[in-house]
Image (cartoon, rainbow, N blue to C red):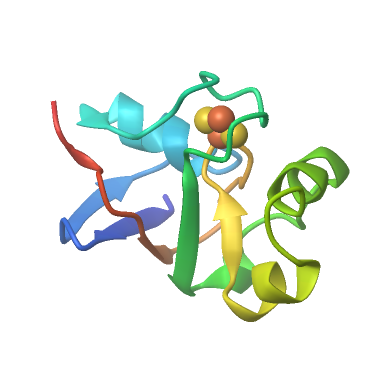
Length: 103
Ligand code: FES
């Protein structure tokens, strides 16, 4: 079972393989910032992948389009940015997202 470590909260949660980062966090009782409710529209859920990027699916077309509306693609890739509502886990990852908290 993949594990997601969330910084700076410093909380580790379990995820189902194929589950999005945000869905796993919500299922674990955490609040994850969102405006669009996981529709890949708002970028409010944007997080930085600190480790384990290889354990996520590839950035999807819609995800990339949404992220690059506000920042250059090079910045997205260099900073390992992902939309937590779209990035699906297959193994352990460490992510950094301010605003995630216990509900
Ligand atoms: S929650 Fe809006 S883009 Fe992810």
